Amino acid sequence: MSDDVINNKEVTSNIDTQVKEEKEIIIDKDFMRTYKVHYGRNIKTLFSENYIYNIHPRGFYLIDLSKTIDRLKIAAAFLARFSPEEVIIHTSREYGTKAMEMMGKILGFKAITGRFLPGTLTNYILDLHKEASVLLVLDHTFDQQAVEEAVKAKIPIVSFVDTNSNGEFIDLAIPGNNKGRGSIAALIWTLTVLILRETGAISEDEVIELTIEDFMVRPEDVE
Image 1 (spheres, helix red, strand yellow):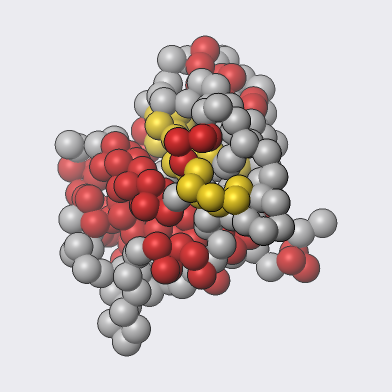
Image 2: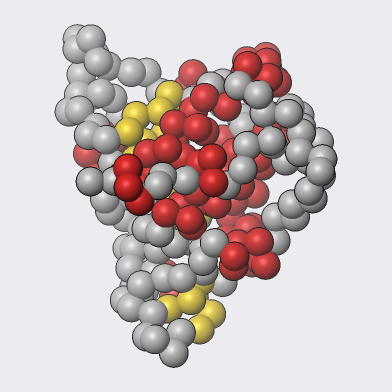
C-alpha cells in the first residue's frame, strides 16, 4: 500500500473531520434503514435478485441491507489499496454531487460531478485527461460515459446498484438505493468512513465529524 494512502489522516484533518464523540453512530441495518437505503424500484432484474429480500406493500422491492453493508466493507478494502490520486469518483446525478465532492475532499480522490467529458480517461492528448487505476460511480446505468471509458481503458469499476440494475461492466457492485438524496448521502458517507478505517486514519469504532446531512444535497439546490 502506498504511503499516500496512509496520509489520508492529513487530508481529513485539513477539512475538519475530527472524530465524533458526542453521539455514537453504529453502521448497521437500522442506521441504513433510517435513510431508506433498502428502498429499491418497482422493477427487478436477474442481476439484482440476489440482493432483494422482500417487496414493499406499495410495490417496490426491498434490498437486503446485510448484503449492502458487506459489499460496502469489501469496496472499502478494495479502494483503500489505491493511492488517492489513482481513484476517480463520479456522478452525473444531481442528488449525488455534494456527497461525491465531500468524499473527494476527505479522501483525496479525484471527484468529477456533472457531465463526464468524452476523452477524460481515454484521450491522452487532451488537457482534461486524467490517469486513474479505478473508477467509482454512483449509478453505472446513469453514468454511462464514465463507465464506457473505464471499460476501454481497462480500469476496474465499482458502482452502487439498485434493483433495476443489470450490472453490466461492473467489477464490484454495492446494492442500495442510489436515487434518493438521503440514501445517496448515507451510502457515500458510510463508504468514506469505512475507507478511513481501512487506511488507519480513524479507528474501527470511530466516524467523522461531518454528518450525513453534510453529504446531502438540499432539494432547493437541485434544478
